[in-house]
Structures are given as C-alpha cells and as structure tokens.
Length: 124
Image (tube, rainbow, N blue to C red):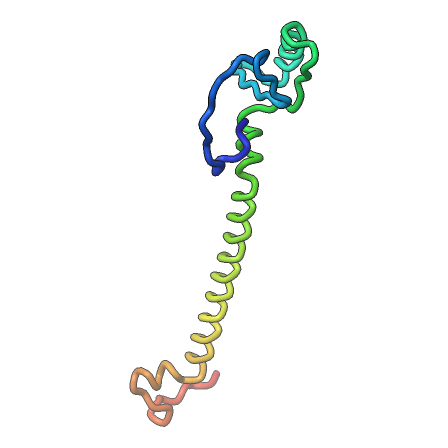
C-alpha cells in the first residue's frame, strides 16, 4: 500500500491469498474512466471471489499523492509566506533608511557637498 512518497520500500513476496490470509489488502486497478465509478463493479467481483472481504477506501492516484504531499505543501506555503514577509520588511526598511539618509543631507555629504555651499533655493 502506498502510504507516503518518502517511505522506505521493503522486500515483497507474493503469496496466494488463501495460503496466507492478510487482514488488509491493497488492490491497484488501472482504468480510463473515473475510479469511483468502478468501485461497485470491484465490490461485486471481490464478493464473488472472497465473500468475507470488504472493499473500502477507494481512491484515485492523485488523491493518494495529494494526501502524501499535503505536509510538504503546507511546509512550503508557510516558508514561502515567511520569506515574502521578510522580503517586504527588508524593502520597507531599506526605503526608510535611504529616504531618511537622503532627506537629512547624507547624500550631499557623501558626494562632498557642504550645506553652507549649497546654492539657495528660490522660494515660490
């Protein structure tokens, strides 16, 4: 049974079901249509072969993979959100630092200008 993508594979030996009864059995069926529509036919055939067994938990492969990848998808979403928040905060911090530095005359000082030597600005 496919439980998770990161699960270790173990050696398998195929034995007849009547020789070694196992309480849980996984059946994989390839179909061109919707897998849930095939469930009633599978139940009918299983009842004909083994009347004491029941078919449950019929799922498609995308559902199995979605369940297996749900934890990774959630972790990636949380990490991506934190990275985006950090990037936004860094941009805001850089903008605030540069604008305050620029507004205080830091840019003129860095370029070698002195506030005394600046030409007077005409007032409107």
